[in-house]
Amino acid sequence: MKNTKLFFILVFFLIIFAVSCKSTKSLVDVGCEENGNITACLDKNYAENNNIRQTLNIWLPCKIHHCDKKFPLIIHIHGGGFTTGEKMEKPNIDFLEAGFAFSSINYRLMPESKFPDYLHDAKAAIRWLRNNSRDLRIDSSRIGVYGESAGGALTSYMAFTNGINKVEINGNIIDVEGNIGNNKNESSRISAAINYYGHADSKMFCDLKKGLDPNCEDTSDFCHSCTSPISYIGKGRPVPYMIIHGTDDKLVPYIHGDMLSKKFTEIYPNNNPELTFITVENGGHGWWDKKTFDDISNSTKNFFLRNLYNNHEFKKEKSKTIVSEKLNYDKDITNIEKQKNDK
Image 1 (cartoon, rainbow, N blue to C red):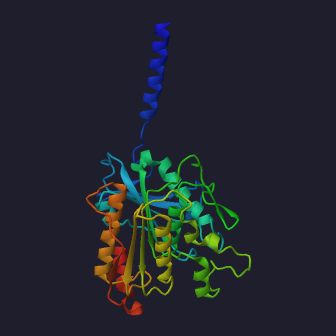
Image 2 (image 1 turned 180 degrees about the vertical axis):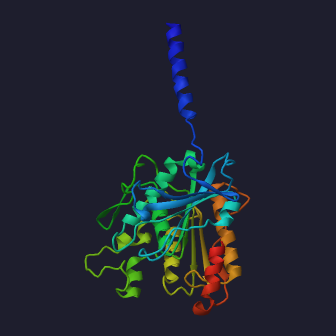
Image 3 (image 1 turned 45 degrees about the vertical axis):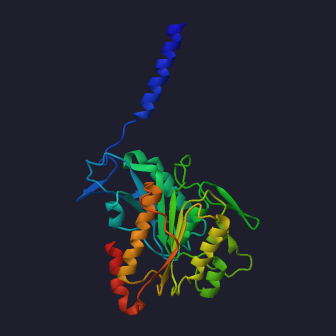
């Protein structure tokens, strides 16, 4: 009898050991390539179909045969009004140099797709990355997201619906998780989020656009609150959240960032979870002077180091105002885009 018990105990531990020692594929085997001191894994389809709009790129801060540990991951979501835009073809070097893996995703666009399709895509991308985290050397317990404009709004949706599948907004049940891809058992949870000048209130945004934007359906029964990120604050499991918005933003006016900040503070007082609202005085829709750009880049890097690496050497930042030079968009756009691309 004793021997039988010992046998089953031994078998149990052998099974556990075998599962824990599941072989990890080489980065070459998963289709990655070395580019200098970086490993790039490009055009991976997270929906497991042939749609280029459901692909992502990922970069690791190591040579392909020397990626011997897992890295926290930062995911970038592009802007473009949900009608245009592409994932990044080059990584954010600052984040790689700080020890993060970096990814940038595509998602389906309007008018072929509508809300919440692009939210479903973003969450599917995270589930795919988490499912492949062992082979891609990602620490799947530490994932942060940031995006600009429409990508900032999509980042807000993700932050505010974190860890939940469905939400009720004014009597409408919204499926925020979706069923894209083959990794439905994986979690789409994130650990930190940064919203660069994304909108808060769809009705306010559409009133400004006067029907000129495809996100703004001219029907009496359109649920603007359902597509308003601010409606979702307090619904999911909260994460540290940063807002960056310029006071001279003509495309998504500054009031949107201010509204998000006030609502977040109302729902989560005492700065728990952490909220940082960076106001860019004289800043437009993503354009400001180089010094301001560098200051903000430093704040965002420290935010992710603090919240993904749990590095408390980087203290929580208080909400603050950074004063930028007042730029002439038409005159300075070339330099503005160059400094973005350099990062």
